[in-house]
Length: 364
Image (tube, rainbow, N blue to C red):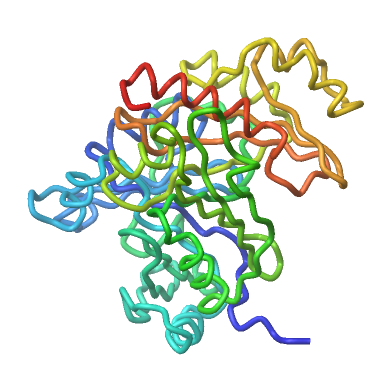
C-alpha cells in the first residue's frame, strides 16, 4: 500500500481578500452566524492590513483588507473584487508538506516559516494553485492561541447566533477553457489526490450552455476540490461569466455542511441571504426520482432546497446568489444523509436557474 506523502487533517481556514474587512465581517457574523474570534491590524502591530477571523464549529474564515494602496492585497481586490486568496490545509508537518509538493512540481510562494508568541508556535508554508489562489500548509500542533501568532483573541459586541454550519464540504475552482485536465493532473501528481468523479457537458448542460467538471480528493477524503471549465454552448456559460468578472481562474464556491438544512436555510433567508431559485415544477418529479427521505417535502419546497440520491444515500443542497456585486463567489449549503456525490440530478435545474440570473445581468 502506498503511503500518503501529503497527509491532510482537513481545511485549516479560508482567507478572503476583501475591500472592507470590518464591514464584511459583520455581514458574515449577522447573516451566517459566525463568531469573531481573532483580529490582526495596527492595534496588534500589523501596519499594512487588517484581518478578522470568524469561526463556526470547524469552519474558519479570515477576511483581510489592505491599509495601503499598492499592496498585493489591494491589487488582488482591484483585479478580482472580493475573493478567496488562500485555501489553507491543516497538516502535521508544514515543512515536509512543502518539500514533498515541491519535489513533484509545485511552485513555491512562501518557504516554511516558524512564527511564535506566548501561546506557542506555528509553521506555515505555501504553494501556488490555479489563478492567484494559493494553498498554505498550517502546522499548529504546538499552538494554543485563538488563531495564529500575530493575532489577538477578540470578542465583538454583536450577539451572534450560530445557524448549524459544521465544516467545509468542498471548494470548487473555475479555470480557463482547456485547463481543467492540467489542474486535475496538478492535484494528482503534486498533491497525491485521486480523481473521484467526472462530469461532462452531457451531465451539466442546458439548451444554451454547458460546463465540464472533475472532482479530486485527498487520501482520507477530508479535502475535495471540484475543478470546472467552460464547454462549448450557444451562449455564455456561468463559468465564462465568472472568468470574465473575476479576471482569471479562482474559487467559484465553497460548500458548507450542515446537519439540519431546513433550520440553516430558514435562518439564512430570515437574515437576508438570497438563493438561486428553481421553479416549482422541479418538485413534481423529484419525489419519484429520489424516493423516501426523512424531511418534510413541503418545507423543502417552501425553502427551495434541492434533493438528490446516489447509491449510498441522499443529499439536500441549495446555492446562494453571489456574495458580492461581481457574479463570482457564492456558497452552497449541503446536508448529506449517506450520499457521497455532488447532486448530479439537480445540475440541469440549477444551470437553468443560473442562466435566468445571468440574463438579468445581461451576461448570458
